[in-house]
Picture 1 (spheres, rainbow, N blue to C red):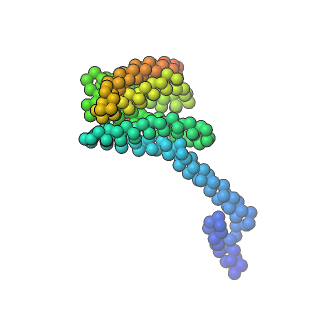
Picture 2: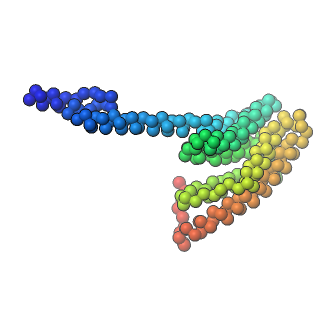
Picture 3: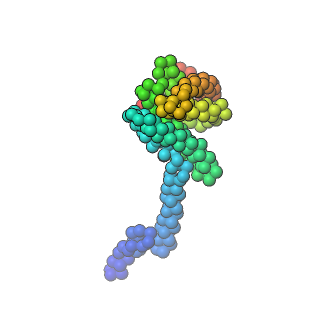
Length: 244
């Protein structure tokens, strides 16, 4: 009975709480499993906190900073600071993807956050520029076109992702993004920029209209590419579901 009692006692091992009656082979298996799972957690942490993702996080954090400076701007330096933050965020839009590919640090989190960060930055800044009166009158329609296109393409991409269909970004779409960011940069400078470069706001508005035109063209391309899959894959008469 004493021996049986000793066999039923439990002991602590490096792999955790293990009964003493479990043989050495089982304990070795538990230890090997613990060693296998430890690196996976480390790898996951590295994927979350790698430099490309940190740049994307910074772009998300730039959104409230830029919007706050434009909302409460009372001095020219606030416009310049907003422009500096916006420009830095726009530059990271290129480097996060480039570094992720160059360093083999692509992650699902990064692929999800990257387009979200871009759209948050553009949409929030355009809304604040309308609020500040920098974008007004007919030019508001250019901002509306850009915002509607972003929502449309995002919804289309989400739907196509369920079908495992990817729509590649065209060269013209990249030019659209560049013109759009430059236009917003001029408009952020706004009245402060007029002191240094007269016509800053006018340049920004003209570029915004050009970006809106490119937005319509590239948006139509995306719609043509996406609707083919929507029509081919959707059952006839399906009314679809309601959004959550």
